[in-house]
Length: 109
Length: 115
Image (cartoon, rainbow over all chains, first blue to last red; front, side, top):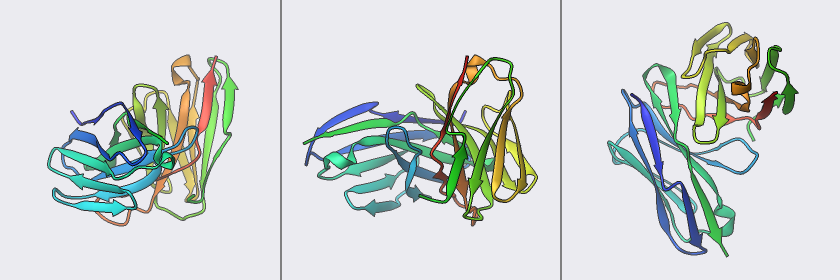
């Protein structure tokens, strides 16, 4: 069964305290892994796509990495404006998408 | 934001009534999707479209139908709404440019309450 699991469910960091969010997946025929950011009351905002194990993508304080079973979203020296829920999703064969339940990140000034 | 709008943004209805949600895009993207988001479940795919009049089911399609008569519009219909369909509904679009993964761009959402 195709499945995406994110951990931790919630994370509180001091401003400047780096950490990582985990996304583990089981899927038949992975066509892509995606990271999104979602602010309260809004739709998810696209961050990264990763296609194959070993791939890395970076954007400002965020870096996403991919292995054959999981992906990490590394947050370096976070700021309060990085507070949001981060969602991981996978695209499987047949154009089906599966989302995790997200990690709620709070960055304290 | 990508050019995606959803209407209505909020709706309260009664059990057994039909409901139609509309998604409109100005990006001319080929793929359009409907998701629902519920606490503890995350986003779940309901239906998607890969072209005008071309649609397919997602993970949670029971009780929902869709139609796409124009590239820019994708409608989600609840034929007879039930309380279990109370949720936030998101539309997403994707250019679908190749075999490998296609990032999605989401609309602002519609909050539907079925009493």
